Each structure stands twice: as structure tokens, then as C-alpha cells.
Image (tube, rainbow, N blue to C red):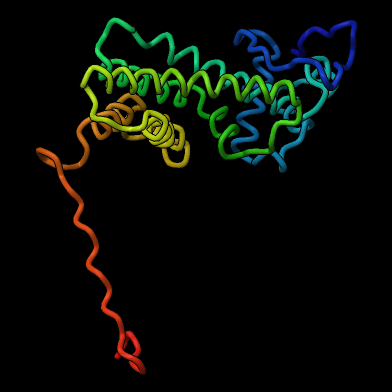
Length: 234
């Protein structure tokens, strides 16, 4: 059954389409189905005709909510980043120690990825680039807010001595790289849950790879200079 039509007809291209709807809203259903299609086939290889057919809608019904495939893509990014930030922020209890907050942040990020796998793949892998400048600014603000949340945890842990001295920005990027690029290999129905993976990653960040105590990586031995007329293979 198609969603009800709106009297305004086709939406304008510059409409702010990215405000996250509730999941039972027709717009949300379109975004979820589009993310599945983009994740499976890639953005460029997908069409609105395929999307409409998969939902048993007419193409015109899609146009009641989105003016173009690009608008749908842009809205998926906002939908995903908003949900990611809200999930991570809600998981953190500021009264708990920084290490506990870090684990909560990482588990929430990974779990949101698992629960919204197709949207994450669309955002990070099936990338087309956002066309709506205003929504792109919104996306950057959401990304920065999410990263700022993480950096605050790291900075607090450094300040109270829980974590050793380090650059919060560099550590934050490392954590986010570990988590976000799970989309390259993680499967929601795989051997490990998102929570298990995030917990292992957190333990790796907190304790490193060494069995006990600090570990200093030895400097590489200097390369011997070849004598004149002699090659390295001689």
C-alpha cells in the first residue's frame, strides 16, 4: 500500500529533507529501503524505479517525500549521524569513571552500526557526496559533536590520570576508525556481536597489546651503505 499523497506534490530540491523521522513514518521507510538498495548495489547503480518496486510504491509516491535519489542519500546521512550521536550520548553516564564512559561510547557506536548496518554502509562505502550545502553543514556539525563527545571522555581520563598523556584528537580518531570501519568486515549475524567487538576494541585501547607493563618499540637497525659499484644484492 502506498503512503498517502500530499497536496503540494513534488517537493522542492532545497527542502530540508534530513530531519530524522520516526521509523513508522513513510519517509523513514523509504530511507531504510533506499539504504538497503544502496548498500547492496551502490549508489550509482541504484534507481528510484527499483526503490519504488521494492516498496510496492509508484515512483510518484516516492516523489511525494523526496525530489531525487540524491535527496534520499543526503537524508540517509543525516538520519544516520543523528541517530549515532543520540545513541552514544544517551549511553554515557558522566558520573562514571572515564574508562567506563569510553566503553559505553564504543559499545553504543558499534551497536548503532549493527542496528543500522545498511545506512552505515551507504554513508561510508556507497558514497556519492552530499549535494545539499545546508544539510552537509548539518552533517559536519553532527559528526563533530559525536567526535567532541569522545574527545571529552579521553581528555577527562588524561586529566584525572586514568589515561596516559596523549593527544585526545589523535586517540579519538583512532577509536572512531576502529569502530566505523567495522562496516568493511562486520556482519550483524556473524560470530561476534557488536558489543563483543566494541568491548575487545576498548580493551585494546585501554591496555594495548603488551602482556604487562610499558613496552618500547626498538628503533630499526640502520641500513648498511653499499660501497661504490656495489649493489644491495651483492
